[in-house]
Amino acid sequence: MRRFEKVTYLNQEHITLPQRQTLYSAGYDLSSCEEVVILPKEIKLVPTGLKVALNQDEVLLVYPRSSLGIKKGLMMSNGVGVIDADYYNNQDNEGHIMVPLYNFTDQPVTILRFERIAQGLFQTYLKTDDDAPISVVRKGGFGSST
Image 1 (spheres, rainbow, N blue to C red):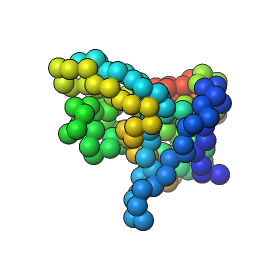
Image 2 (image 1 turned 120 degrees about the vertical axis):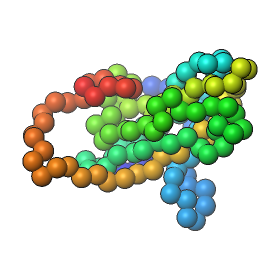
Image 3 (image 1 turned 60 degrees about the vertical axis):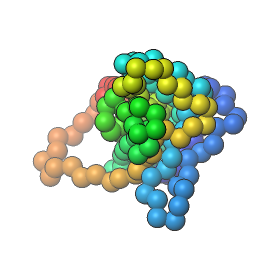
Image 4 (image 1 turned 180 degrees about the vertical axis):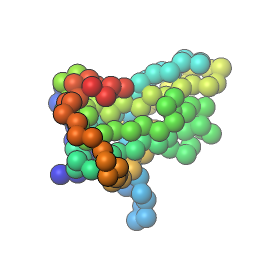
């Protein structure tokens, strides 16, 4: 079941599904699906045009590409993105993966369409032995647990 898909509401035919770049790469490169200008000291959500289907005990962790800060003067405003399995196909935004970037320079920075900006790593996780049963279903999109 683990796979990347294109979000349907954007109708982006030219979005390429993420791939690992080398034999031993752990991460799948995520790219911007549109050109985005980030003003100095601004945080902007950069759309990827992607969603991800995960198994129930998995999470996709999204990290900035190592060159993002050095070459572009950008960083992810949340440090690491955590995409839970129930974010997929949520009613707000279909599970669209967006990368929040902060421009820490004094100049506008342009992210080009198809530019690789982040990398996603799949990881399984554990719960405590006394984890309480939860019946709440996610309804919200980006930055929401419910």
